[in-house]
Amino acid sequence: MKPHDLFLVLVLVLTPTALAQATITIDRCYDGDTCSSAKGEKIRLACIDTPELRGKRADPIPAQAARDYLNALVAGEEVSIRRITKDRYGRTVAELSKDGVNIQERLFDLGFASVYKRYSNQCDWSK
Image (cartoon, rainbow, N blue to C red; front, side, top):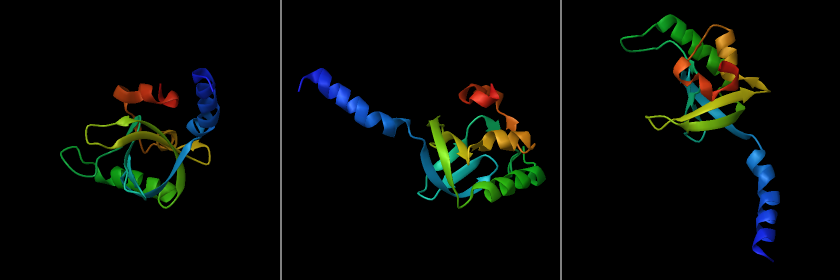
């Protein structure tokens, strides 16, 4: 087998796997834009920002509403994930979707989140 034949075989074999959407199970969301998977992966939802639960900028009532809605939507559920990068805290920055619905866009549409303008270029829907 010639090197270019091996390359073609690898492309044909690996491409369907590479293109398949990855799925994970969400364990819980501890605020409106951060969740953990059942395997312990910390996930920062890309392109959105929700009110803070604690700290100087805390706004607990809308922060709890965002967290509770997100948990009702995805906790214990299998979701699709599009991993984008890692943030400075080591969390995976990603887009999540469930049943074809973009979770971040849903949070924004319902008023639980705002577009995080600094990073909005990471998601097609928020540009």
